[in-house]
Image 1: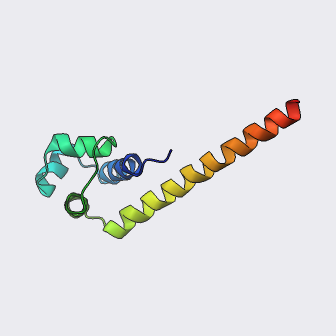
Image 2: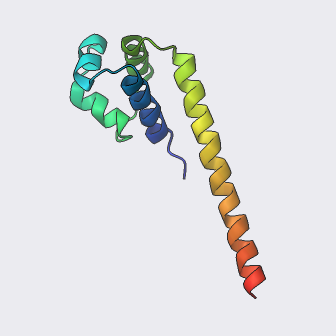
Length: 96
């Protein structure tokens, strides 16, 4: 199953690291607790639209860029998941 919150967290973490920022720096600029940002990055918490806007502002990245990256990651995971049963079925059929 594709979890949007996990992929969003991965994209946000990548954006933060790309900018060489610490969680503490993002936390201070976004005015969001460090622990909460950490949970969002790990996919343990859902980010509200307000939180996401604050994080994007702190990271100096457009929300549309973050959502585009997440959308691309979702598409890749979906493609992988959809192909797996086909391969498994083909493998079972070939073995029989």
